[in-house]
Length: 159
Image (cartoon, rainbow, N blue to C red; front, side, top):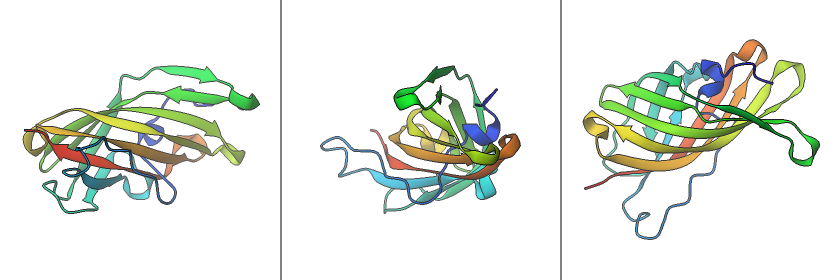
């Protein structure tokens, strides 16, 4: 499995469309749907793209990960590695940080896929009052280089 969670594997991600997180009642009316991707699987950079109208503007910048734990489970006989990275996105409009929960499964030829959820834990600048949650998917290639990643979810600015 992953001996360590590399920047590529700690990224947000996805191969194709990822379902958005489920909003709570009343929250959906003000929430804005967003996508966060890392071009060419490069987890050191990010692009935040609004998918619906709202106060969050397009942004881009750098991303870092730290402070995660690893554990292993074996549902239905398949080994799954669970990680929970704290990921910080520093863009032109401010900084936001989320905590993710990612389940990794090994594929053939050194590839792996991770899917999971994320939740905003803090922000600065334009993101000082940001809250949100969603889903993510990541494809990692041999030697943990990023292949593709995408996160989608719902965000809004609290009072």
